Image 1 (cartoon, rainbow over the protein chains, first blue to last red):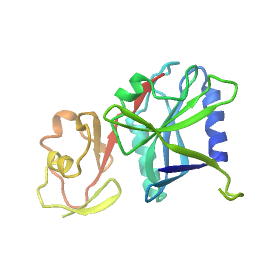
Image 2 (cartoon, rainbow over the protein chains, first blue to last red; image 1 turned 180 degrees about the vertical axis):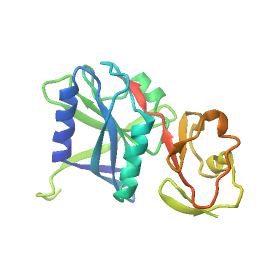
Image 3 (cartoon, each protein chain N blue to C red; image 1 turned 90 degrees about the vertical axis):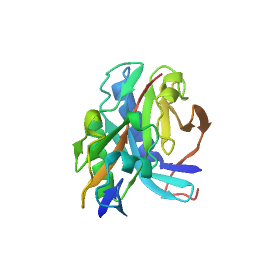
Image 4 (cartoon, chains in turn yellow, blue; image 1 turned 45 degrees about the vertical axis):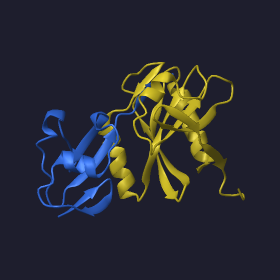
Length: 142
Length: 68
């Protein structure tokens, strides 16, 4: 599976996560699915109800509002994202344990290094597979 | 009857219960899924007795959380 995300969305997401540092920031991703390929067209920024530096939880009511917006915009829910302020861009044991939707892409933005690192993962039955995430520009061939 | 499930219109028998829908839709780990019908969340204790009706809009929301 190839997941494409415009660099402007990536920049926007990184900036948002940095603004919420040292708390974990989180939200949902939505877009289009064509066969095995996914194109992220919108990033949703939701409250981390834990307001913690090492944990996040999405609020179901906000999730619901985001899903309604996706339906109204003709977008498909593709997964979620959250930041790791001080750890790598990989699912923690808790991330894996709480990944209940095998159809979702789980994106993790690490702010540990000077430059943010974003990866996407498929999690199913406790097994993690790194997805082929490509940051793109519609101005160029990719 | 026609109901909308996760954005798609689908045909189901009249009198379909929520647990039957959850089975039919092969919802993973349903114990960690919040169900909304017409924008109203269904309390866990009411899931078993909830019956869908024509025109309902159903969404399954997975718990989403984690830690670093």
